[in-house]
Image 1 (tube, rainbow, N blue to C red):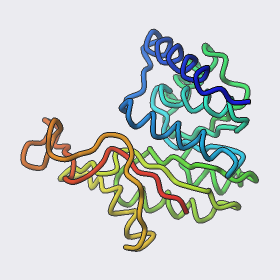
Image 2: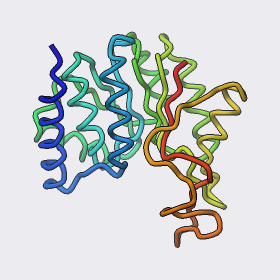
Image 3: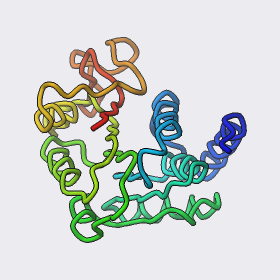
Image 4: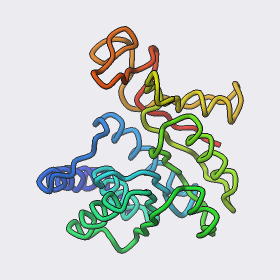
Length: 218
């Protein structure tokens, strides 16, 4: 039986150990909370979780812990060998590798080559945030043998003037204006974060109003 208090204790220790290894998640604590609560609350909607984009493995480790707690498998996809190696090493150190599969390549390649037979309770799209890449990933979602219960997105309202990062626009254009993703993570209201009027040095900013992430139940 799932024990929420025990899980939180395990999660606190996992975060500390991940940081000690130099591999904390780059997502906010609010995003992590919302993501994990969704997985734990909807684990019966599928047999697996799919994560696209793992970077160093900080969030991957949390996902692996949640999956272990509720009996789900975790498929991790990334195009960068260094990211796969980093996340794989971290999970090995944390003894969370047994129920995790790594795939190096794009999400469309994973779908066409692996043809996963299980239904994902959640598919997390956090790879390339450029508009065309998100559209390709959403088309790959449609090509899965079993439609995921829900999709999750990071950097949902992030923008850049030249690299065309428009996750929210890609979702709207793919699913239509009636799609209503639920905001998760940090709220972007123009206070305490980069805006179009005051962007980061590299040009990135957050659209206002916006959010760090979003979940869309299909």
